[in-house]
Length: 250
Image 1 (cartoon, rainbow, N blue to C red):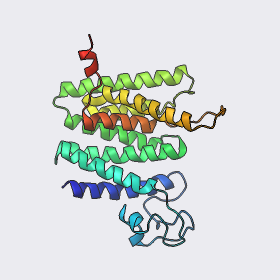
Image 2 (cartoon, rainbow, N blue to C red; image 1 turned 60 degrees about the vertical axis):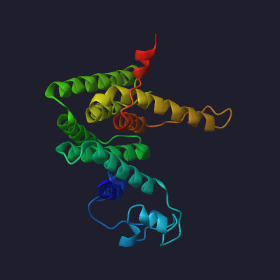
Image 3 (cartoon, one colour; image 1 turned 30 degrees about the vertical axis):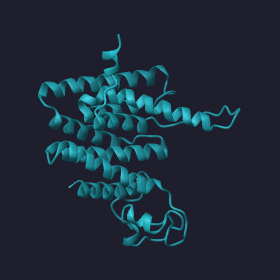
Image 4 (tube, helix red, strand yellow; image 1 turned 180 degrees about the horizontal axis):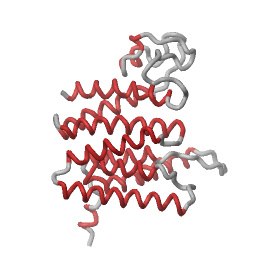
């Protein structure tokens, strides 16, 4: 079953790539043939098989020979793996259905944020709603769900305050509701995920600083939503809790 859900996730990720590329461009995401990004030639069906088409063509477009970005098959592999992990954790439950929907919307938001450094409302609010549903059906009790909502609200408030006090220099306001949705999705793993997101962001930030040319003072704007998504999902699927160190310290 894991292979079936991996394939499902890869197919959905392929569609999400088209959706995020066409969103707010005037093109319809549900209609029209896919075209080569380099030469705009229509792509045949055998060139649209997730992951497989990229491997068979050795990472080059069949129509013009242009090198293809690895981001598309990488997103297909990632969402496929997340779908398989979600099934292994939740089984065939109602929570799994909303988890799949949330993961798909989460990937769409991250891809769009990486491309445009903005989180579109037409994806953000459905993500929050589906995450709330996933969290509700996975929660062991109604009291537990309400406690998860409270933690999510605290995370939302902390990022909103960072935005307002920095006047948007350190963080966009949309990251606050995005983190709210992520926290609802992972439930009990919300606080560890929140910490992990800053660790991941710090690690990537240090890497970017080390790669910057010596003497350069030009800043690099990096969207925070991918770090939030990585941190929350890492905590959820690994169930590793950094607060365990507080318990063993004297």
